[in-house]
Length: 243
Length: 343
Ligand SMILES: Nc1ncnc2c1ncn2[C@@H]1O[C@H](COP(=O)(O)OP(=O)(O)OP(=O)(O)O)[C@@H](O)[C@H]1O
Ligand SMILES: [Mg+2]
Image (tube, rainbow over all chains, first blue to last red):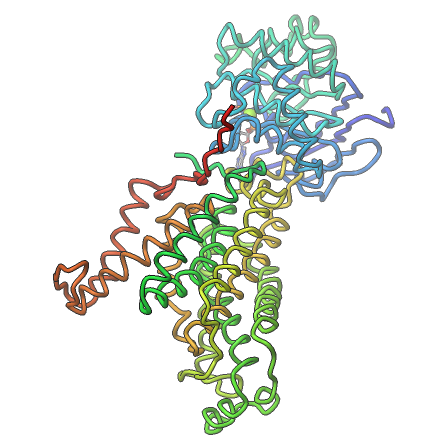
């Protein structure tokens, strides 16, 4: 394990009798984009919630750059350099797009001026600067996903966790997301954990992929190998969520 | 529906409501003796609604407890300025606690102390209240009002109990009251556009997403609650120097209902909303009061049954909640138009 990496070690979690995560260990290195695949209900969002402090694990530890995060609240983890997006978007609907993104920096204590500049430049890099003055609740679903990403990136995080950013995107929008990820990798350089159903997107965006099935990590390796792995195929068999 | 709130400093946004306030004070406040008193009271209420705006408007957490801060502010200012002989006479039968009889300070020093004491009480209570959410928060703030009211209503050692403390020196000057209102407005404006205001609105919009951006909901709510409590304290203090008395009953259920109506009807997301709500409900209330008393309104005499006033204001309140949840102003600030240069 790299001293600078984001590391989840042997994470377990049950909801009542239902074991959702079973000894899941995952490492994301600086600047690396890791894909996390898994069918519906595999425990992906639960895992993210544990990493970001929204849910408490039953066992295991989460460490960033050698510093344990266990017991820290979500806002403290954000300050430690962990940014996240939500499966359901969760933009500040009545605030403008520019303000949504600026808040990503303001929340971490940047001045209003810096936040404003960052918001402008990130929206421009993502090619959605025209949306700035619009209320975030009024823009299209595809654009909202990008704004959610922009807001998380505005914090200049060390690690960015994304919960199905491509969910609900159409054929035209998905490539824009792929582009955005590339731009973020180049400009911010943060390590990324990309949770996705969209296998195509994951294989294109990620250098490494892990597969979660009913709480157990069944694969960790090269994206191309994942597609040919027997266990992975079985886990996905008959699952309508795979494209 | 837009409850966005302003984020960048704009002199036009700041001057807009100030100019309207000056015009109202000059034309309405100067029209007659009775309108002067109504205007003075409206200025006090406006400061109270500003206090509600900065906390409730930005956080989205409804507070039924701010009457407690107005009550404390009013009490502090009254007890510090009422003449010693009045405190001695009027309260001797009430066994007022000895050390409270002699203190005498200047009205304006008293107002500053009012705001400070109310802010302090807001800080102490806020440490507990600001950990609550939703319904629990509403009920707990209501409990705060209940506790404050009952402590003062029943305890004659600290104040007049159920009676009034008369002889509180008057600020019988529209312009001084206006100045206090404008200072409060400027303070609230800068809080609204500050980091506190902006992050607080983020927590209002989505309490789950805000912490992911490093925002501590507890911390920003607490800071706003303290500032809001201090401004409410100032409002209560001002009111005691307009009414010339301090009376616990003035800051209880009706006060809480009316001031929250002003905020919601005007539009809780902006200072302009606070201003429109305060003066509109004051005006409507005044007209209805005259009708209840069978007095002519602009030469026309319409009598309505006693109690209609409260019913009509309540219905307006409900109508706004149903059909225009952003209030009359719907989150907009009033801007004075830019002066065009003639070339
Ligand atoms: N708070 C909770 N209480 C009880 N059960 C839960 C809770 N949260 C999640 N679960 C259950 O845990 C399992 C994993 O859920 P999770 O949301 O982590 O899956 P996921 O991999 O993100 O699925 P999807 O692809 O549909 O988003 C599911 O069976 C879900 O019903
Ligand atoms: Mg999920």
